[in-house]
Image (cartoon, rainbow, N blue to C red):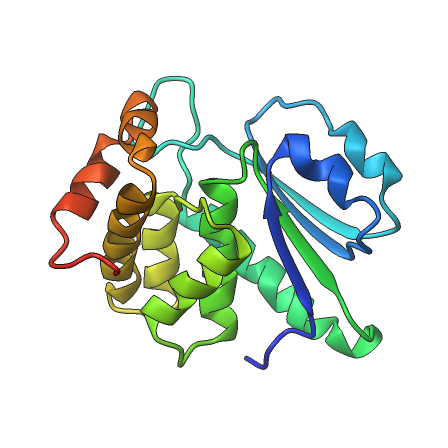
Length: 199
C-alpha cells in the first residue's frame, strides 16, 4: 500500500475539536460511545469526509457495553484504504482522528493506520511517530491486538505497545491511577512485565 497523501495527522478529544475547525481538515474518523449525540463542533468545519464508529473504550467485556472488535479495526483499516484510493482526487489532506479524550481509541486507530501505511517500518518507530502526534497516547490494547493480527505484525505491535506503556508510566506516573481507575490494570501490568522500557 502506497503512502497516503496526507500531510497533517491530528489526534484529539471532543473538547479540542473546535480548535481544529480552521485547520483545513479533509478527513475525520470519529470513535465514540454508542448513543452519543452528534458533535456540534463539526458544523464549523469545511467540507470533509467523516466516518463515525461507535463502541466503548474497554479492554474487558462489560454488561451493556460494546468491546472493540476485530470488525471495528477492520473498518478502521478499510477507512485507511479509502484514504489511499482517494489520493489521486486531491492534492493534499488533513486526517483528524478523535475519541472522547483523544488518548485511547483514537491513538489505537492512528497507530493502526500508521502501521498500515508503513508496513516495513519498525514498531518502535511507529510508536515514536504516534507520540509525536499525540504525546499522551495510551492506545487501547484490544484494538492494537486486532491491528497486529490483521496487518501480519506477528505480535510485534503488542510487544512494542508494552514498552510504550512503560515509557508513558515513566513520563507521567499519573497514568497508574488513571488507567487503574478505568479498569485498565492489565495494561499497566503489560508495561511492568515488559523486558525493557523505552528510554
